[in-house]
Picture 1 (cartoon, rainbow, N blue to C red):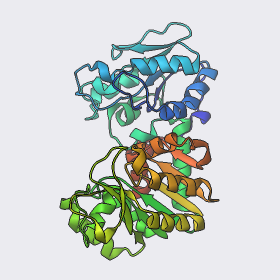
Picture 2 (tube, rainbow, N blue to C red):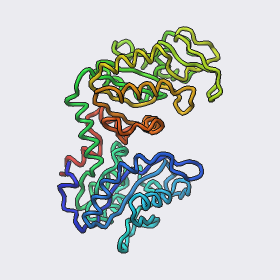
Picture 3 (cartoon, one colour):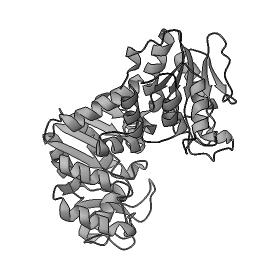
Picture 4 (cartoon, helix red, strand yellow):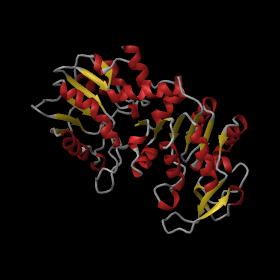
Length: 384
């Protein structure tokens, strides 16, 4: 892909598609700013090149054509102004052109407010492209989406290239896919096996060991054991059977932390997976499972992790996720971690700087591993 470092952007008008889709609480406070921080190198590089900078992003999943103040990028513009020490102006009406003032960055209001964004509307794509001399795609987390602000604009922009974050993401994922040190351990959590069926198959083929947790593990456990009131996918039983019959390197929990409710005051018990009561929920992995995982991680040279293994947001049920984090950061392996919930867990335990590579993507992270490409990266490669 054409790299922003190899393009003359000096004094040009550039539109950077960033991923500023960060969690915001009911009071409008940013809960986690990791995606914003990882987007800054490209923005700062453009500032140093004396560019006139436009930034676009989405936030949440609003109804197209309807303004929703809860999903406005206003708070993001204020945050960017502070962290960049530069005036960042939120622009609501921008599709018919933008006039710049000196010493300001323009942040376009949530692109998903625009009708046609998610359907990759050609006219909308052309309007985005008309705003700039150069389009810089830097939103890896949306690179699997064929949307106007990520994909369609590339077809109409005068010139397009990849930003620093996107280039770095692809470089590290290629390192995992093309030349990983072995043994490879993949850890996959999450609620639904149906959404991660393909990636589980891919990882089972290329990994020495695949460890599963969360609702995915519960669905696999349910093939042979009662799981009480635990979260699982009854409609995905056939997929679960296929996975367990075809791949013998998948490790499921042998014991679990269970409770009848999910609070910090819950009465918790450790149960073998063949001894879960009908009124209990599996909410974390148990001590025996933790030991198995820790021993596997100690021997690993490459670790991929996507998805916590318990309800880590609640103190009673975060021991499993915490133990995985500690095992990874104390290993000598190359570790690559991605997914929103997983990043939230890293932030909770303040260990960002101890992971080899942190991916901003969730769906795009898994899709790239599954397919060795994404729609946006493939398009960028073809036009350069």
